[in-house]
Length: 130
Length: 446
Image (cartoon, rainbow over all chains, first blue to last red; front, top):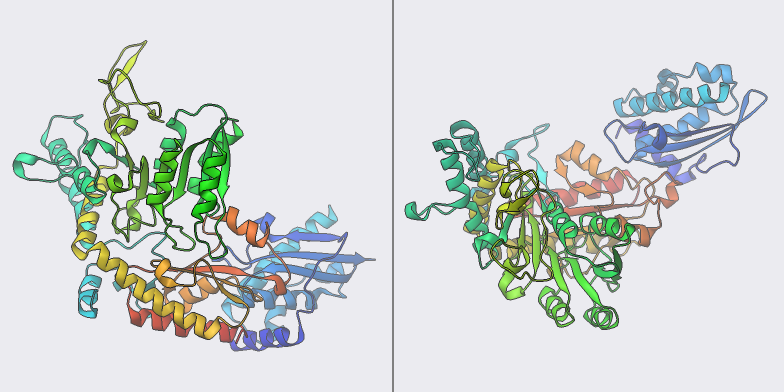
């Protein structure tokens, strides 16, 4: 695991998984099991379910459930921290660079999982808008 | 007991063990899924394709076919023993016609399930730890209301409870007992001989799934008095896609006998190779084993399967079991010593490794427990297995359905299985323990 990812992982295991959980009646529900998009391409054990609550076009709350390796779990936590309080327009612009900047790493596994969670977000946004 | 020098020599026979990744040789601990293949077995398949790739089974009259036929059925006048005869001796069957080539153990179980003369309401008795191979074929018959299914319950260590089994036989009119001889999750071997004796005493037939037994232990079907027995050759250094179904001769049918035993199985599949003659209105089947081996067969696989048996017999099954179990003993002791007290590391099956052959499975109940097998593979070229091990029914009962679906990290868990074979070494076990400890440390478990 990348050192920056390890550091963040240690932080969340020490302080608690801030965004872990689920939301009732979410505005957007994204299920990577159903979408068949694992967070890590070589894993059948790296799935996430994301629950997003939107109030007046702003992300009011976000939670996730996962079954994944530490790196993918870090990505899920970073993802939530990046989108909470943001507008839908800002969500549409979310990219891997934001994840890289957030931890200060370009680790391949970390960015791959970031790319996949962005793909899932886009699917969720499409469904929300339709 | 196999010594280190012998193991070093044996390892030279396995080309895959030289297949380094990032400069590291593979540490292959997934043998209960499929074993590696030694050169003599690979060569025998190559030889078929390169030199005489003909049809077996007496279909064709030319020398390619003769060469193929000879390697499978033998040629006594040339003192050539065929694969079928090798398997007959391997499990001490009474007759070569009792040895049916299949695709694998699953195929063999399905042949029995689909061909057995069930009467509506018949009871089939399984254990609670069956592989899907020995569960789904029976569930399908239950769905069709043809049979009832009952399950014996293992004790808290995953061991078979003979007294409870006996009560079930006394209570219910069981028609067929179908059980894993050795469990793929725990490595525990059931007391098969006594199970069969009791079943027969109560008028039930017995099918044993010996997929995890045949690679490690001698099997004597006559001594066991088992009615049907299946296993896969890919778990014992053989090619993929070849298995054996043994059936007692009187249960496999015949053209000549006027009165057949009640429990004779019919071939599940019919077609070329299984039939003596046919008209637009009728057909007659050949005697076993041909009647069960319809269509063009996996001839190179069947030839190589015989080579695999010869290979492991040269090493000796007793030596294999003792050696593999000694590695299991070492790993079990180390793992329990370091993690047994943590509360998040739990062994499956009996704690005593001498009851688990070469299999060691454990549950890790910690955040982000999934993915350790991938980590070990990527960072250290160590191959172990994770998941539900095709024993979903048992694990779902223990952990609750959907236990592998996304959940809060605090509820994460994953089962990992190490399965050993004779080419594994104590050094590999040490590297595995070190790397596993590193993974645990990185994940903040220790």
